[in-house]
Length: 481
Image 1 (tube, rainbow, N blue to C red):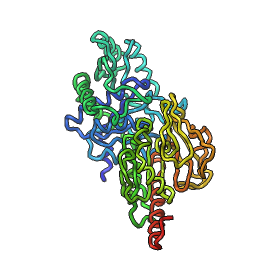
Image 2: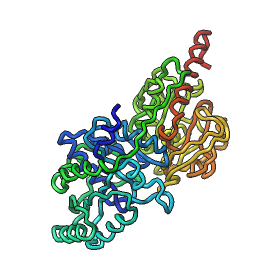
Image 3: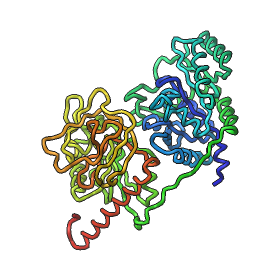
Image 4: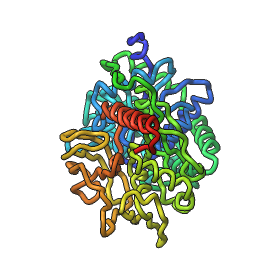
């Protein structure tokens, strides 16, 4: 692998002064427009995000990968960036929140920090609602705030008209020296309506390709695409990161393949590509399941249920009784199950949403009540005070959570217990998370495999142990376990 070739891949980070400024609209439009011109674009999302990442993937026609310094190490970030930009014409990274916003006053884990880490120039997307010359002052402040960051240009958003555009462009170029690379007019309707603190998920949106083509047309008409590509190439030569590729060794214990089910349907869509790849690197064959329509479950040795919005499909999940009954039987037989957030809710007794109650799997004696506001939102750290099916005592996992559900226990916990203390975040109640029952582990925390390198290995190992025990039981003519 030629590292110098990968370091020379042109790259741009789209950032803003705050969340909701239009960087998603701008980045999606640019990516889609360049993809239609035949460019192969590697796309990345800064921070823990599934929804924007899905849109970026749809726009580029390539998988979108997340980069975040809280969730993973510097080596993991630069290694992933190196690997994913192989053979690409351009890399585009969409930031989150404001350019310098992090978890502390030093801006830890910010978009700015990530852009410096991978040597990417920044394109600043500015919401120009009810502002003219002051925009130049704000941009000048960004330039001076952290001088080792390269801000290469500006895209104006929500511009009211030609006069408004003229004053903005003149002031910004006069007082900052940065080129204004485009002026997106104020649109009558938002092409991507907001929901869940972000845009509507692509899989719930009617006609996502039509929306992306509309954004591409806006970019073609209003943004200097050739100039963006030129800037991406110009700054890369003087801003090369030290890229180190990381690898995850295959567990020598895994001498034979296992089959791991992944429930991926309209209810459960939130999976980092790296997590699925981590399982495959351990020799696992992924079997994709649909909890809404599948009547049975093919022979699997483990199950991964990711996050999503099960409440929007609650009636369908509740009515698929055959699937639920078979899965419950497999769990009672010892099937290893790793469930995150929405997957955790599916394991519960009832899902309560909009004054209705829907019967879920019933493995955990908890009801999950959907609230109007987030119950847990942000980065999380869990510490294991005892062994679990996938982690050992004293292990620690870092991730993030975003859930509207409030867990309510039944009178009896039915043999389930918690194995994690919450060091950061909310979990079940601000104190505990990581509920275990037999070989089930359910948590509100979403993890990223690049920041939890043993996760894929541990899950594949648990699946193989289950497979070997099941085969031994069949040899003796007994039902598994």
